[in-house]
Amino acid sequence: MSTKALRLFPALERHLLALGERIRLARLRREFTVETVCARANISRATYYRVEAGDDAVSIGIYARVLKV
Image 1: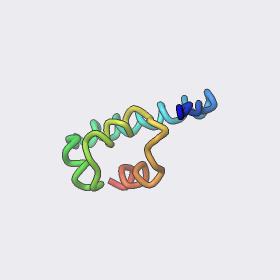
Image 2: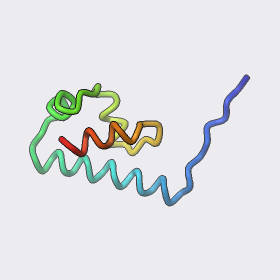
Image 3: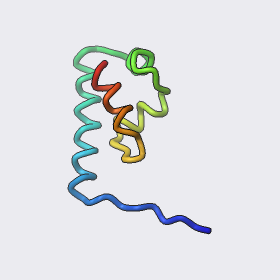
Image 4: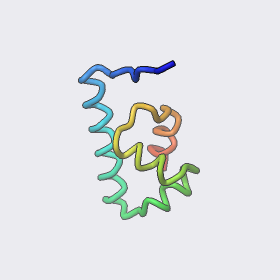
């Protein structure tokens, strides 16, 4: 059985990409390393890179933890 990935609305996709970019810029402004953010948010580096890329498969809870850091 093949599963077909669902596409997001284009506007929502743009919002997630922009959010990921703003998260990355905030990390750089604060001079945090990726390892520091991952340790404080208790997530893996791979998940954090997906957050910065605006991946829609990452849960909103992960985004909230990163934003809290």
